Length: 383
Image (cartoon, rainbow, N blue to C red):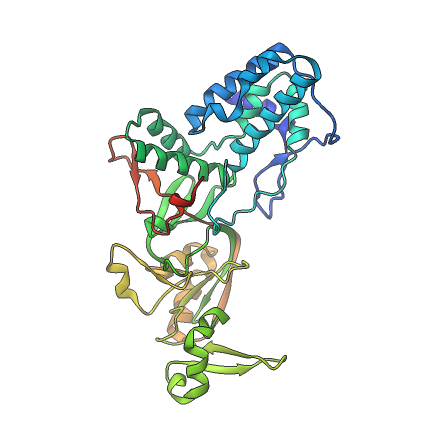
């Protein structure tokens, strides 16, 4: 294990600073010509071989990297083969191996692996450079420790899958963020690596899965209107509004003609509104939000996959207030009391991560890890 001092000294050679606003993972910084081939010394090859041997501890198969083939090679052929192995391992460490589930939608950008490799080999620190690409989150370390003691094949596979998902996540989650683990049916507010709040959640049904992705919470809307997504409107609601507008109006639904001659449906704020009384704004391309619900009895169930994809949060007022500046927190209760629709900006904004992890730390478990139900079957799809 590299010391923190060495890691801190080497990190600037590997990565450029990520844009603060986006809070993306840092990306390898040095550019290299596409045909540039690092020249590997015997010591560099030895470091690579050691790194490949260690991949088993990360839940990967050392045989996938065929470092043994380098023994019979020399010169440019060996350089090219070693670079190919190192680049594959760098990819698998930094963004995960294999194919993810279709609804795992985290964007890790476009790392410059060749530039990273050129600098790592030039500095003769390939082993350290590869180690740098792994997650540093304590949860990953717990899974890694559990895997080292695991003897049950199915459990070992689940742990390996979830270690790989951690490798697909951004490396810097931030000091304060909202963490939604779909198989746990839970929304947590993390502050300084501690759980400041924990809320029961209702997630998407198996037919309308909640996707896994990252966004930024920009504010809170109290007494929101609901702009019904076309996918839901087409599922019978639009026809009902057209056929019997008065009956649907009693539920708060109104049909609105759009400028292009189309038709969309909105639901007024009120006790029947599907978003409840509070909506947490988090711009994204999937029409997914954290929000309240009028169907609060569903939180009493153990398995809570009932929504069209959005995340319903128990006691959302407490979470919403924590996401706002202290001076604005009373505004939530005031707007709830008045019934007015009001959006309150969040400053500073908070990152939110919706993840799908079927193995997570549990101090009460023998190996420190509990296995959750594979609600959407994503574990079965992992390759």
